[in-house]
Amino acid sequence: MCGIVGYAGKGEAALKVFSGLEQLEYRGYDSAGIAVSDGHKINIVKKCGRVRLLKARLNQLTGGVGIGHTRWATHGKPSDVNAHPHASGAVVVVHNGILENYSELKNSLSAAGARFVSETDSEVIAASINAAYSRGNCNFCAEPNLCDPSAPHALLRALHTSAQTFKGSYALMVMCEGFEGFAVARFKSPVIVGAGDDGFYCASDEPALAGSCSSVYALQDGEYALITPSGIRLYDCDLSPVERKFSPNRARSAAFDLCGNDRYMIKEICESPAAVKNTVSAFASAEGDIDGIRRADRFIFLGCGTAYHAALMGKIYLERFARATTEAEYAGEFRYKDPVLTPRSAVIAVTQSGETADTVEAAKLAKTLGARVIAVTNSPRSEITRVADAVVPVEAGTEICVAATKSYSGQLVALYMLAKRLAGESFSEICALPDALGKVIKSADICALADMCARASGVYFLGRNADYALALEGSLKMREVTYIAGGGYPAGELKHGTLALIDENTVSVFIITDGELASKSATAAEQVLSRGGKVAIVTCCKGIAAAFAGRAETVEIPDLGKYLTPVLAATVLQKLAYRTAVILGRDPDKPRHLAKSVTVE
Ligand code: F6R
Image (tube, rainbow, N blue to C red):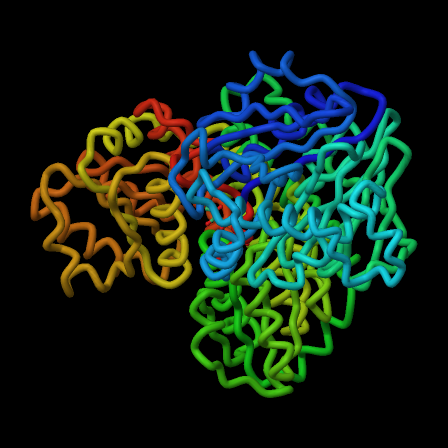
């Protein structure tokens, strides 16, 4: 969350940074800003709202070195003044992360004469670096003459000096007047650097550099970079120069092409069959010792949001196929509960971005407690892959829409194959899934149901076992893109309290993909109908569809067995959420208050 981009080269920095920010906007869209050096002075344009609002002012920025930011507000409401870049004296900063000790630093900088105009923690970073820069303060350099602030490296040294006082997370790009370049630091927030044909780039993640850099390097925690029109120099945590291997940029600019679709959300739902197919093909190339966790006596699946819902399904798969002791937990809960883990525990961390702070920190904690960690991720060079002992790839491709869709389908099949492998079973049946998924996406008619949901005061999703995990995901998708209140519940729990929510303005969507439990969920649906609530049923069970004909909206899907049919049902729920959002005039790609890649707590 929050996206940062920097450029130094022969081109117009404003245009390069602007286009990078547009490609990073899914990381936050509360405000945007760009700073460009004209060789003497750094000019800044920034504005509350979307990146596109900067376009009309790009002509105010000329020069070949610039940095930019698209914000997901943490400290201080979205506003022009809280927008990045933040300037203090000669120094200009963009920041992704949270400075936890900002209040303490702000007090001491204020006492030393610094003045602040915004409510942000990031402005404190600018003031701190400016103070170190103005002092020529340099812990690193033993030679006083090199501490001259006008020497190119003085900015980097000031950044390094200040960073020693920062607590929290940061990916930082810092410019200062009089220096044609910018310095970069990283701690717990992602940042990559790359060389293009026309200059040198830096960004929060690979998609921002799709089309401009074919190879990239992801900075590690504590590493620094100095980027100028003549190149990228990398430094370790003591500012000793280091050489690093660059790898191909996997992001493709095609991911940003809507290909005739109105929104990324529907485009990406339609890409689910390819995501599944590619994930199946990639399973053989999983890295690390997956089979090593067969010896584990306990498996804990972790994730946040949609990835947690996939983790719940992973738990169901492994429990059923391997009869193993399994749990699934929210990563953010797990990391703060003083978990009991042993070297015989295995943690399976599910994360699309591989950068979600809670999931990464939970995985690190598990490792320090001796557990083995497997990452299931769509981002092969992300932080989670550095923590994990083994990586099971999800090959969904770049996902632009904030709401996860194709990556969830990919996660489900990756977890299915992992569970089968740990159980020593084959999974050739999965080959039928991509085609079936393609057909369901084309044919599932959810229009009448979406109309019903768009008029509802609440939409509830219910199911049992795997269908309950799906209910949670269906509900999250509906809530996040439509803002309609609701929830996901086990169908059997309805009568224990939730039934009190039901009235004629509510819709209850029952997911019934498990024939053995169908009659149980059907009973709960009858209880809703008899209390005047509207009911919809997504099912592969013909008898159920017939029993509710004329009394409930039914969406029928093919039966691929009780473990793969949920993948089909998931796309129906995604389409339903999408269509309802469109009816209500919401932007499903960028729901209010949200952002992709939650790199802060
Ligand atoms: C919901 C959604 C989020 C993410 C969650 C975890 O549609 O996208 O709930 O699933 O923030 O993100 P990752 O998978 O990147 O760890």
